[in-house]
Image 1 (cartoon, rainbow, N blue to C red):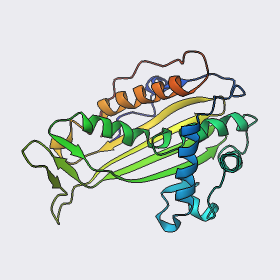
Image 2 (cartoon, rainbow, N blue to C red):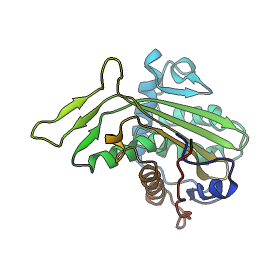
Image 3 (cartoon, one colour):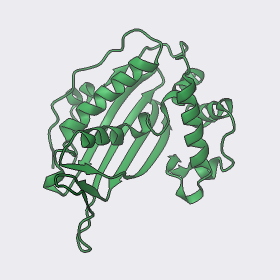
Length: 244
């Protein structure tokens, strides 16, 4: 179920979530905790062989860099070579990636948003999803596609919690797919968000409008907190329409 019509330029413009400065030579101050988290995540996934869930141009990270990463400098050099190969702003973008490309950062922003919505629900929660992240460098910037598949949810309305996975003939399966564009000028757009949930009970958690609003707030706060730049600009959230 697509909730944004990509053919409508007016709606597409309103998806421009954040712009944090056109001069990426003014690199953000690298937070040691974020850097260490990114290094740990990318090193672990690079060594995960066929269990690796990060892809670059649909090729597993574990096939590109099976030896992993020993230092932050090595990770940033990898980013410049594989994620930002054709831009003069590669140095600044590589630092930005080190701050944001980890398990609690930009590539997982939709799942993080859904988990926040879920944690605030007093009747039900969703389990961790199966995730696939693909990074695709283009002439317009880096496209990050986040795919999540949720196969279980937890009923916490009673005295005892109960896990639901559906039936053998009809297993539970909720899915999201989000595309982010990190431009060479340092701006980020959410270019597409798709949500599919077959269960009406889970609609409060998999509500496209709620997910997008949480996602926008998360990204704006992420940039304002970490980046050394003037106040970020943000567009008002659109009024999503459920299509098809």
